[in-house]
Image (cartoon, rainbow, N blue to C red; front, side):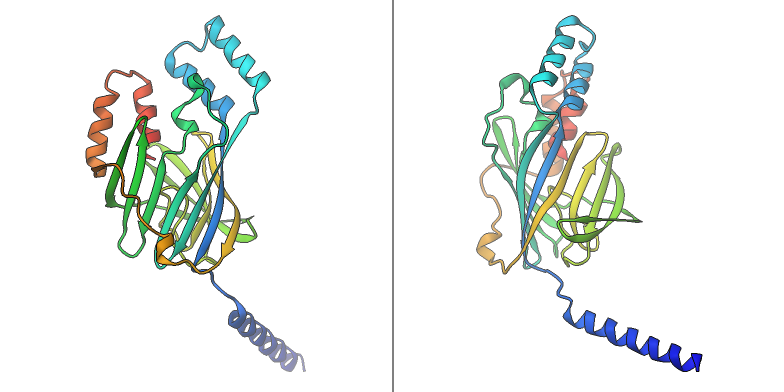
Length: 260
């Protein structure tokens, strides 16, 4: 009798699973809104240390006054449009104008990126101070290690993956296979689903999706940027290396943020 009951339960579960699978709709087109969150207190302190003046009275007073009069986290918006095996990452300009001295590289959004997922290539409009560069090259290959940790982001069940890029930048990403596109914010991609969250713990910055709009996307919404000095990644590296050669300890930090 128990054996018959077990068989009936198994059949019912199989039927329910099949019904669920038939009604599950995997998203392949749409728009994702992202929020970039920057820990300004931590980054300013780090910058002072790189400049070698974190211990003088002026610097300590400046940092203390900044922390008293400003929020700890700077928030920025961006969007990722995806469809037809392409993604277009677009930063949304800040409504508030930054104040000169604290206009750090880390506080800026410098990249507009069209990625052709099937080809493994991207076109990046990158702003480096007052100069715009147009980079046509292959996408960054990231050696992800998928974990068994999960969290909900914008209503999607996301799985954690870890990686190390540029030899020293630790990356934590959360992706969902409910969005059947191997893309993500900025230049992060290469997981079996859409990346909805990225954290660089030691760089004090995160990108997390706040909403996902499931809607058809036409090709005119996925156009590559066209204006800028044409270079590839190697050529941009050489340009930055030359520009920062006399910047001391801040050179590596600047290079890192301009090539993320």
